[in-house]
Length: 412
Image (tube, rainbow, N blue to C red; front, side, top):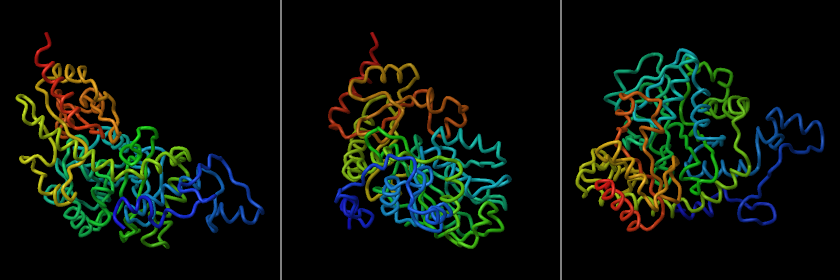
């Protein structure tokens, strides 16, 4: 099947109760058992079934199965937010004293999280670009993970997944990627060598801006050295499945970062139009970037622009698409604010991946806790505006932006 057909007719879309075409919402806390023996087996993970929604729920499982099929993984585990997905995905494998190599152009919330991990003895070492040339000199015996966004948010650096995964595996280190901005529609990172994929499914996967959630997908292809990865030692008998099984039965279950059944249901309904939405969103982003790049005094960043250093990689890795985010520099912070305040259709909001086009000033919001060096590394300046394109008519969005820029140039 091709992508849009799989969304509606994939193997994970089974015969739901009452012949429903999407799963019902199992909005319950606990599940009844016919015998104490059956209940004991389910609680001990020795039999399939549901006992308590924090540990498992049919609606949440249906969402996990859909995402896992799209990504081509071994298992997917849904979480209460994208940030909880990143947190649990890392804590599931890391111990005090371990080091992570990551790109400095990460989403501001992820950088804040990495700062918090230092309290647990986990250090993050940053490179400007997540490339083999910059990563290799930093690898040491303590390096246990390489982490990157597939398309940086908002820096829009593009990760060469195959090249970085080849280096990581040669040094016996797993590669974890945040594919939120790419989605499985643009690329399936596990197919290119990534080991673990995380999403903030609140974004493009949900699409409607109505539910916060995250998801972790394990490819179960990495060969864990259980002497090096101490956190997984108790699960060594499971071999390549150790990461998934510890995450499901230990880390995720004990930390209580479960997704609500209702939010899982909303994600499923949104997911079914992901391909259609991403086609329109990417097309709009490319048109807007091209139009803004013609305006004097405006500097645009978008992977498919002719002068962009990631253009060839994006065309090859994402099959001709550049994603739904672009940024531009207005010339000054004051002018950026005037542009934002004059927008009519474009909504000033902090989300991405909505069906609506959204705009934000990252320096004063998402990167308010970052110093200037961190902001610059992420492509965030005092005059930067980030645009997350939606599905409106591109002509209206271009007119809205150009009118706002003209008004900002002539404030009187």
